[in-house]
Amino acid sequence: MKLARNIQYESEKVSYKSFLKAYGHNWAKVCISNAVLLLCNLLSMVIGLAIVMFIFPFIFPSFLPDSLKDFLLTNGFVLEAEATNEAVQSIYYLLCLILDMMMTGLMFVINGPVQCGIVYYLRNLLEGDARLRDDFKKGMKLNWKKSLGACILSILVTVVLIFNIGYYRNVGMGSITPFVQGFFTWCLVFWGCMQLYVYPLIACTDLSLKDVYRNAALFSVKSFFATLGMFFLQCLLFLVIPFVLIFFAGQIGYGVAVLLYLLFSFGFMTFLSTYHSWKLINNYVKTEK
Image (tube, rainbow, N blue to C red; front, side):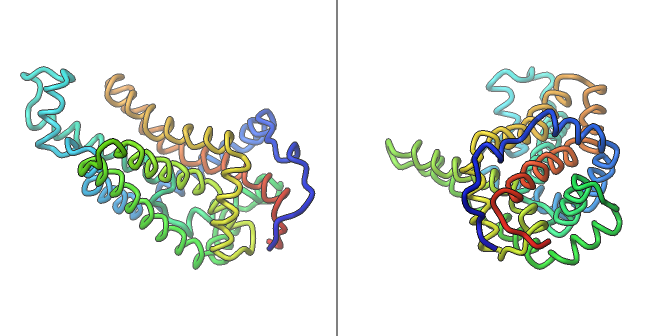
């Protein structure tokens, strides 16, 4: 597949009104897709939890049950009388859960074939002719090899980047330490931006995996502000909002956070990335799927 030539930049712009209209017409089907994604990513979440528990402490040494208690007390987040071992462990495991959901929501650790199956279905939903069961099965069957390779590669690259951020944070290289750490942090952010396009490109084109990542990088640069906005929206939906709800809104907030995970966040972001990616693919990539 080759990039199309002589395409006007204006044609790639996404109308947010048209997106909201499309989402409004299909919100129930997107909610069902959310449930499928959540159910089929249970193994991915186990892998993501392992990364959170064993790799994240390289960046934040206090992110361990024993160290977390001292961190909370030192910074005045809890009173000494409230900082029982049971309470600190509860906070720790809730943080692990939120970060685990973030890893899956940002598509760093995700079931690639399932993601492709849902993207294929949502693409057909946008085209006006979709059947969840048939499209989901077809999307997985056609793309399972490339999507499996993509999800394995994503895990490896994510782990390496997180490890490097933590390594240069703790080892230190004098005055250049912030620049090196910032470089790997930006690489991680850009890698997250690319994930928004990887599975739509796999599901909707016949590109090789190498060309999928090449075009994902090009789309991330070409549509930089929209891509960065979607990435930070992911961070908001999978990290900031659940954290605030769970730790500052009591039992009601905890319930709302669970409902967001079950019915909204995964499906909404997959629908948004598919909508935006399909616009770019139609404009820039010749596809036969």
